[in-house]
Length: 128
Image (cartoon, rainbow, N blue to C red; front, top):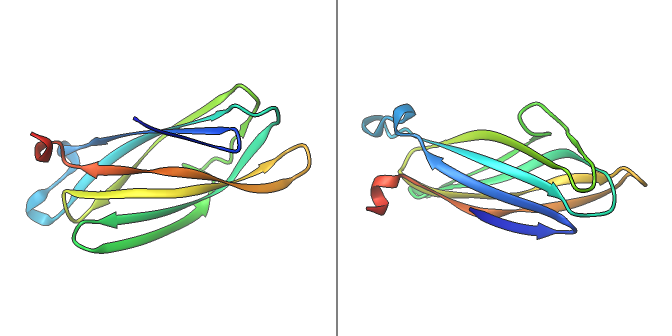
């Protein structure tokens, strides 16, 4: 598990290769990742949008922007955690993802960015 804290917001990421949804003969490798967003600050926050930089080891970079996460723009109170699971497919068996969330402090509507730490996407058979 990879963890990072930015402005009192702790992001933890765990990634799992999904061979049952992958097809190496067709250059399709599927990964699932679970993210926990823990509010260690003294104020309520809302996740507004996300930005991803996705690198595939064959040299492809993709940028992905979007509102919220998995269709939600969660409010996270102090001491609470929001978790979600999503996925990413690559054309090779190795790559990485990194990015940030745009958040607002509900007390004054000020915006800030929370870094999502880089995590590797690696087919588990490469690790043996």
